[in-house]
Each structure stands twice: as structure tokens, then as C-alpha cells.
Length: 137
Image 1 (spheres, helix red, strand yellow):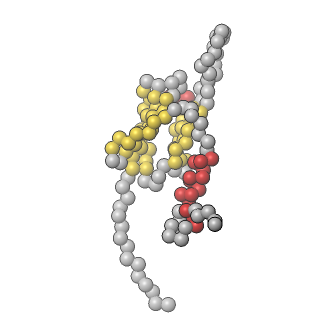
Image 2: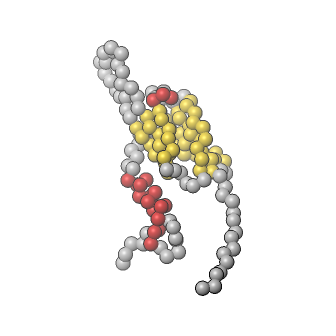
């Protein structure tokens, strides 16, 4: 028996891109750092919160690439002549990716008490009924 995929199901036409998005997200291998929450703040809005203690606004970059929200963090590893007897807080890089559905728009990003909040909103698509004419062959 062969494996049925979204792209090969006879009633789901044009969903190949969704299947590719799922595969890309599964391969991204997001590790557990930094920890994050996703909450629904209303019927059409969401908030992603990342715990980014030790990062400043200048250390963070938020981009939207092909419906993929990418948050990158890179701390500068400047020691400023410091001599550490123990260094348990490392300057660590990260990249977190979230695939956004069509119609989801990124709002503002706010840094507050070591937490980065990114607001998202979903636009309701217009419901369109279209009649298709039949041409004589």
C-alpha cells in the first residue's frame, strides 16, 4: 500500500505547497532555545513571546521570508578586559522560525523585561462565490 500525501490525494488540488511547508518546518529542527509561548489574544490575533534575557533590541533581528517569520539573536562576545573565574552565561546565538498561514500579518514587536512579544493578526478572506460558464466545444 502506498503512502497517501496531500499532493497525491484526488480531492485536494493545489496543496503541494502546504506539504512542502510542513516538510520544511519538520526539517528546521528548532531546538528548545529560546523557550517561547504562542497565545491567542482574540478571535483573529495571536502573540508569540520568546524569552530572550540578556539580548538587547540591537542583538535581535525579525524578518519575514516567504511567509516564514524568522527571529534571530546574536549577542556580541565582548569581554571588555574582564577576567571570568566562572562563565556560566554564554553569549549564544539562536534562530526560531514560524510558518505563517496566508492572511496572517505581523504587527509590532515589543521587548519587555527580557521577553520579546510579536503580535500577529489574521485577516478574514472575503467569501466569493463565482459562477463558471460552460463553453461549447
